[in-house]
Image (tube, rainbow, N blue to C red):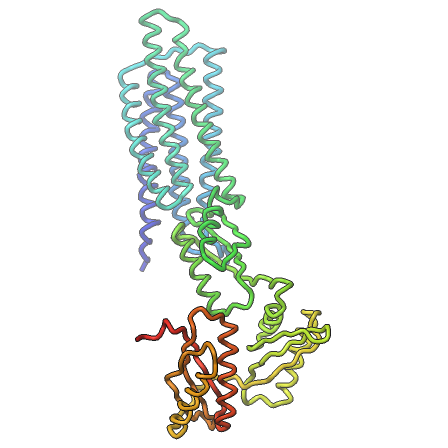
Length: 471
C-alpha cells in the first residue's frame, strides 16, 4: 500500500498542478487571439505563457522530487532539485525575453506588420491578468510557507504576466488612438510594449537567477548568519567561533562551532548546547542544525585551569588542585580518583602518566604530587552513631566561641558508612564573608574536631549564610 504524502509536499504539488492548468489554458488563448489580431505584444504574451507552461511542468516535477527524504547517496536530501528547477526557469525566461526583443526590433526597424486590435484581444488579456494575479498570489504564499525557490520562480512568471499584460493592453490602445487620430508613430506602440515586456521579464528573471546560482553554490543566505550570531551571543558562557549556513531547497542547514569555557562538565556543556539550539529554532524552526562544541584554551596566566585542562583531556578525574611557588619553582598537588579495585601498580602508573603530562604541557610546573583516592560509584549502607552526637555538639559550642566569623553550628549528624565514621554539620557565617575566608574557618573547625574525636574519619562542614536560616 502506498504511503500518503506528508502535508507540506502534498500542498506544494497541489499548488503546482493549479499553476500547470492555468498556464496551459492561457497559452492557448493568447496564441489564438495573437495570431488572429497580428499583435506582437499578444504573441509575446503567448510565448511568455508557453514559458510559464514549461516552467510549471518543471516546478511540478521538481517539488515532488525535492521533498524525498535523505538517503545514503544524498545525505543532505534532494532540496537542490528545487534550486536547479528555478535556475532552468530563469534560463527559459532569459531566452524568451531575447526572442521577444529581437522580434520587436525587427518590427520597429525592418518589417512593418499590421496589427488589428479587437475586443477579443482585450478580453483575453483582462482574463489572463486576473488568472495570473490569483495564481501568483497562491504560488507566492506557498513559496514563503515552504521556503521553495521553485514555487517562487513560478510565482514570478505569473506576476510578470500581470504587469506585461497591462503593458500589452496599453500598446493596443495606443494603436487604436494612432488610427483614430492619424498619429503614425503610435502605430508601433505594440512593438514597444513587447520590448517593455521583455525588459521586465529579463530584470526579474536575472534577479531570481542570481539567487538560484547562490543557492546552488552554497552561498550563505543574506543576514541569516548575523541573526543567528546575535541570538547565540545572548547565552552566557557561549562564544560562537564559526557559523556556516546554506540553503538547499526549502531546508536551511546551519553548522555552528561554539567555544565554551575550559574544564566545564559535559553535562553543563549539553545544557548550553540545548540553549543554543532553542535560540536557533526560535528563528528558524525547521533548520537542519549541527552544533560542535570546543573548549577555550585557558589563559596563560591561569596555571590551575591549565593543569585541569591537561587532566580532563586524558579523562582523569581530579579535584583539590593546589599550586604554590617554592624556591623559584611552582609545585602542584592534586587528588586523583581511580577505580577502588585497581591494583596499586596500575594506579601508580596512571598517576605518573598524569604528572608527566602536566609537566610537558605546563613547563612552569616543577614537581607534581598526585594523591590517589578511590572513585566512589556505589551507594553504601549507613547507620547513625548516637553515642558521639552529644559530646560533639558540646565541643562545637566551645569551638564556635573561639572562632571569629562562625555564628553557630546546628544539624549535627554522625554516621558509620562502610567502616568509616562520618560527621556532617551545618555552620552559619556572615553572608558577606569571601569563600576563601569561609574555607579557612571550616578547615580550622575540622582540625579541632578531628583532634577531639580521633574516631571520626571524615568531616563534612556545610557553611551557609546567616540570612539563609529560617527564623
